[in-house]
Amino acid sequence: MNTVAMRKGLLNRLVLKRGVSLLLVLSVLALVVGCGKAPEQPVKKQTVKQESERPVSQPQVKQPRSDEPITVGFSQIGAESAWRTAETKSIQSEAAVRGVNLKFSDAQQKQENQIKALRSFIAQKVDAIILAPVVETGWEPVLKEARDAGIPVVLVDRGVNVSDDSLYATLIASDFVEEGRLAAHWLYDKLDGKGSIVQIEGTPGSAPAIDRKRGFEEVVAGCPELKIIKSQSGDFLRAKGKEVMEAFLKAEGKNINAVYAHNDDMALGAIQAIIEAGMVPGQDIVVVSIDGIKDALQAIVEGTLGASIECNPLLGPKAFDAVESILAGEAVPKKITVADQLFDGLNTSMETVSGREY
Ligand code: AHR
Image (cartoon, rainbow, N blue to C red; front, side):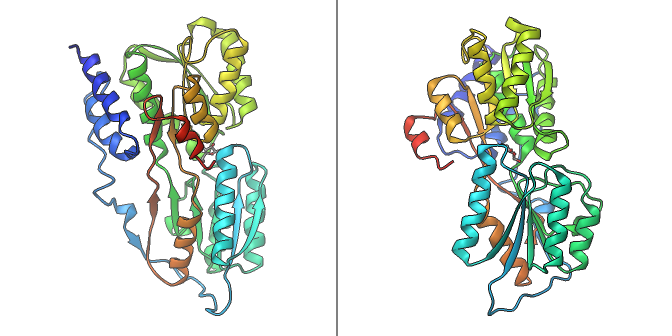
């Protein structure tokens, strides 16, 4: 058996195990698929706590009165994807379950609106802030204002780039770099190590767009016969994913063997463009993406989407656990990593689709 066939067999057996977590799969993948590069160190995140995942105590936090419900401000990015809507619902419903007074603000994709919302939460003297930051940079001044007011900020799903990490209490998120790597490894296996890929990126400057691109390109760089021939942002939107794919098809047509989209919505838009161009998604062009939303799982069952790497949006319980711990003066880890898994034709059925909440 040649090396590629051996790798393929091993990978197939791996993805067959439904429910195996993404991090566990990655530990093995890092060993078996090096794409000609020296294999990287296996990922040990499940067993070894990284420095950033150890609980750290919080700077000066205002303690709320124990006889009153707490008030939390939540600044959400917008509603660009099914994933985002599921995250919003998770945080809103968890607040209701815990009797938290939640102040919700939808920023319509604009950082300036998020900064305004944070300043308004600070002026209203909320007990804590939950922030899903649209982009990584530009947060230091407003985070300093929150810290000076003794209001802890819990980041959900996306990280920020700040020189002083005491500006936020914790980040609860998936590992986007690993998601990108896993998508590349899956595609390598599917294409037997060779082919031309187009990449539809997320919102420029956002943590998932930066990290998913980095993880994916890092693996592809080690595969001499895999090439990324075009790359453009589709802003995490289904309609824009379709538009970008139409342009790629116009420019490259039948040269395209695969699409890597940074989220499922853009992948589903791209699939529509492929169908409208008279090609068969899954046969003429393989599509892989990230999120694991219900529509994507359905597309996997139908054979139009090859695989989706889950990125769990149900962050409400973890976010409020963190808020409550911080307000109780307990130490929380600086990074809480959410474990995800890979879905493809080997472990996805109609039962999986109907069991999906979002
Ligand atoms: O930050 C998470 C990403 O943002 C999701 O993958 C995407 O669907 C969303 O819009």
